[in-house]
Length: 176
Image (cartoon, rainbow, N blue to C red; front, side, top):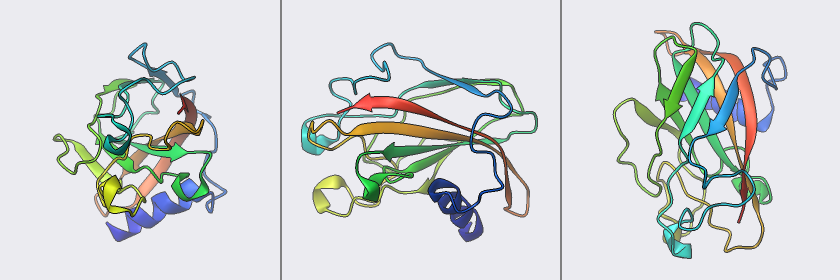
């Protein structure tokens, strides 16, 4: 488990240059809910400290490389370096070896995750008002115009805990 967490941290901050940095295998991601337009974070999808009850957006992912058995989604605040590169949490979704999946929305500020979803790296905000240590922290910049994004990584996990990156793609979530 520790090895896997280190791999993700390395991926997220760019230490591993030999791994794919764009969608080489053709993976495509679509925000399912039209309220998530990639321009503006929808009303109510902020953290509780900002009056929201946010959850991750539902994602439709196609073109998933063969032998992928897990999809990792890193939630980033691209305007605030301490919360970039998965600083809002990294979730992993177990999938069967299929080319198309829809990942469901996952509530923020909790560790109560559905079956088949796990927290690889909890969000990095440390103040008590931000529910420290929970799996995902919704956008929480106070409406300052911060830019949020996600990095989606297709993985092949082996039984010994090692992970092989098969593809990776980045998409914007919007500003808040």
